[in-house]
Image (cartoon, rainbow, N blue to C red; front, side, top):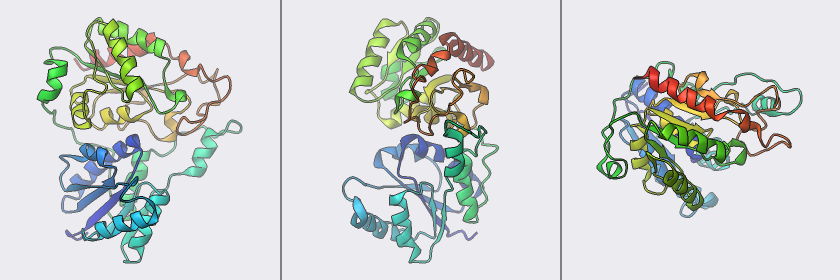
Length: 346
């Protein structure tokens, strides 16, 4: 490809899905170092792409300035000034379709993600379920670049250099003198949240031996995590205390992250932190497991007792009688997996 190629990457939301683009884009720029990329997404997600060579970020204000068709046309006119040559639509929703349709009239080369909706429907339907591993979202993203004529291999990611602890983060955490564990116990939907009483057991046990940092956002989560931290030694809630840049910096210092099928799992995995994920109504087979993590790090409910899992792709559908599915993941199982990771990396 010519060295003046400039790819516009469109992925407007959600937080975890945008984070999943990061390891793919990192692999891309290593394999195509002369190609420029501009990522368009929500402004608060910019820190995800900081320090990636040849990658610029453009904030889309889809609630105000770029709202609606007229707003998206304004966004298109702004982006057009950047001398874009290729469009990689990693979202394929109404907004991204509208934006790329404007570029279509300018004869840009365009490729769009195949979300595999039919096979995902077959995976999540309660009857006659086709239960098999689907292509990962990371590979689906890479396939878009392949379609554009930029072969992108994500199979063997390069090691990431450790970053120093930021002073603003160190003011909360103190200096690192032992193994650090992160816990992000929340998710967008109840079907993806590990029961809080069980998670408190995990935190209580782990924090007796290791510093544990609690991650969350929003007032209710901040209040809950603050109370949990106050009850346990060596436990600090950073919810509401860090911006995204600082949160990513802290996650980069961890020796293990415990998270749900949610954004924090992807924040950790994109920085090559050993990541344990707890699954409820969703399942790794849908393709949303954290990048390059062993499948053994995905802890699942008892699928013999709850055979209709996954009940949905995003966790937004709960089947009656499946409310307690995650209780079949015992706290002792989570603790044992953490200790295995910490021991293997010591």
